[in-house]
Amino acid sequence: MKFLDRDHPFFASPVRRWVTVILPLCWAGVELWMGSPGWAVLFAAAGAFAAWELFIRP
Image (cartoon, rainbow, N blue to C red; front, top):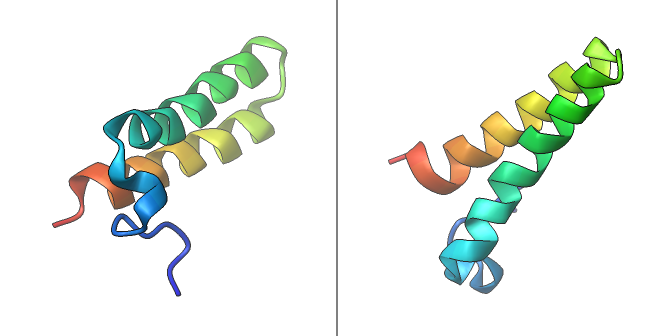
């Protein structure tokens, strides 16, 4: 079982894929703005991982 499976029926809609990527990246910006760089890096990594799994990975 994969952490993010692009073939799962939940991710059939492109909107859900985009929200899964954009939401953690936006939250990383909020954390950085609030002065928490550790949490910002964590959420940015989660968003980057989601982008890799859902859009970039062959």
